Length: 403
Image 1: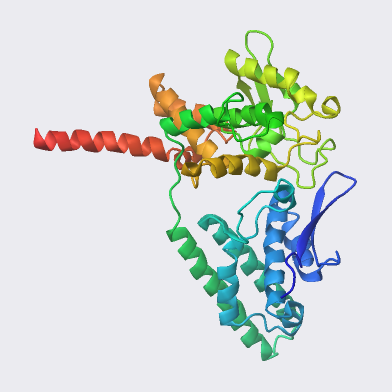
Image 2 (image 1 turned 180 degrees about the vertical axis):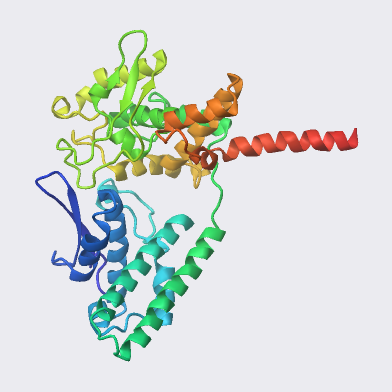
């Protein structure tokens, strides 16, 4: 069997600061078809990080084909594509990805299986990318045929087959999607007790305890995405005066950012108020702990690795994975995205306690999350609050029946 990592994504940083991902083979040579698809149809329309994830899917497609001795390039050139059984096997295989890679390996993470399953929504997105790519590849051949060429009918049937089988897989993923909720109040309290820097249960090395504490508390307090947290500059944090604040700023193509995969602020920029306790926490981290990292004074970023480099997106995942490894009760419950759900649950509770009406709460929630003021995204992040309110109403209704 061939070694893993036959096909991978290499990210090149252009002089403009743009990250350009390319699918390459084991020798580092770009593979033509996926890169042509990316440059022609996706690069003008999506952010760099989205492009990287899409090309990772196509790298998976090509590696899967090589392991099965399928010459995709040849199949594309003659317009044959994949057979129905092969499509089914590929779409099913896209449910799995390999562990997080070198960064975790360097930390000697133990007991990680060879493959892990992705979320249903992620599986559906990966199938959709593979579908678009396979259809595009066949259509390139189709468009070169003369209008009266009888081969076009068979090729159109193959295109329809790809779309139909992909649609069936996407429906399955959507139907089995689990509604996400944030952590309960008890789980929040347990998490905060675990990550307290002086806690005997803290799973982190002493050198990164305060950094991870500040990172998780920020994500829990403001519902920050990984990219938003990692894009915060030290100068974005104003801990002085009677009204301390923290700014979330969009900085695409940041010349100061050396990361191959650049974190991105996907929402609107905004200024967030800091409670005095939060301001003190951040000041403690900046002045007494971040300053101990190598060359920290040369980097503008709030969160750094132990080597003094900007913290990577994958290392944020690793921080949460360490907690789950030590406390299996959090398995499936604790991820960066769940922090956003938890934040919006707590926001709903605070809005109710402070007597905000629906319109006032929606406007405040949209601003704090960086959404457009007319957005309805808050509904997707309020499952626990909706369920709690529904339970109260249902119990009151039942009581009226039995009174």
